Image (cartoon, rainbow, N blue to C red):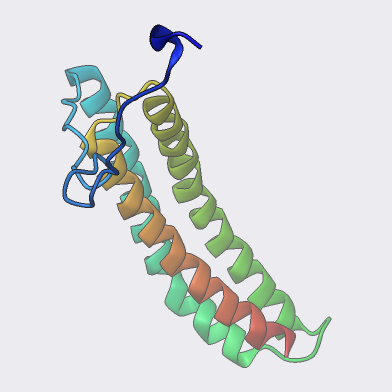
Length: 142
């Protein structure tokens, strides 16, 4: 083996303070078109959530009063739950579009912060709706 063929050198591991994983990702500004689109999706999700919350008290009353399967009160509760699910689906549509934008941004390594913020907001709204729907479904079944 010749001297040029010998491997030499030292390795020093990166410490946590030097790690690039701990550094925040650079903030990528959103262009006006994307900002308007995100605002529209967020507004649509919030409007659907408001409609959901407006019809929720009626659905809660009907679910609490639901009789056995097949009874008129059970059928009324089912219709009220379907109305709630319809409102939830409107927020979920906005969320799915935000998910698409989020994935595109992550894939291109160009994700503006407003996308994640809007997505987190809509996830929270849909999660609140899911929890209420789950409670009401349990009342109507049980």
